[in-house]
Image (tube, rainbow, N blue to C red; front, side):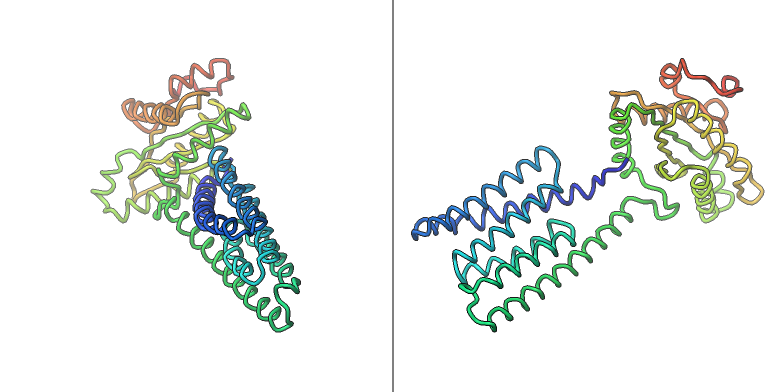
Length: 344
């Protein structure tokens, strides 16, 4: 369901930055080539600039960054070999930035293959590297640059993944946070409309949580939140998405579940919390609101319907599940579970 939205955004930023560097950096050399009468190399430089510029615009318009990045890396790799062949030793200097760019633009394995092809192709050019010593020095230096780039790319990706995980999750409960929920809701909405499959949202809030903090202290309140989070994980599927929205309020995104299934899940969680979560001798309960996604509505509207259903559960006495009215109408033809009508 995901789609790696954050990875795509990061990759797009790299593509745009790299494209800008290529256009700004190579265009003056292309102009110089034509002025110096080196038309063939000048045409090659312009072809590289044009291809890269077109790739950036296409990626920006379509949002497809992976193929564009691979195309850009391949084009620059081929181009630098041709420039080295046509321009002699001066053209070899372009190999080094291209090796670095490969590891920034494409996955490390693809970058390693492209870089190996570039190094091998240039090393075989006797017209550029005339002696065995020159070939050896070129091969050693370019392999070292590639190894450093590989390690840098690996470390950068690892650290970025860790930072994104920290930024997207609540440190106390391990649940995703409100910021991450916005992206998850949009992805779920797109999947639901594309696959014509239902998806639902539960919003639940622990009842009288302030009284727990006041009576037992905030550390005890934190332990209650952790207990609830662990319970939710035990009783939900891997594809369900669990969020802490703030304080004692949580959300659960449930793909593939119609209103009847959502109601059953909500009742299970509510009853499990009531029977299993304790703070001292005090029973912990929660109020749950649920809403099924209606195709065409906004993420804000969908979440707001679930919030209003949860507030209604609070007003009606807490420790209960309320189905959003819009979800009830959308599910008018669904078969209701026994006893559902009495509970709502």
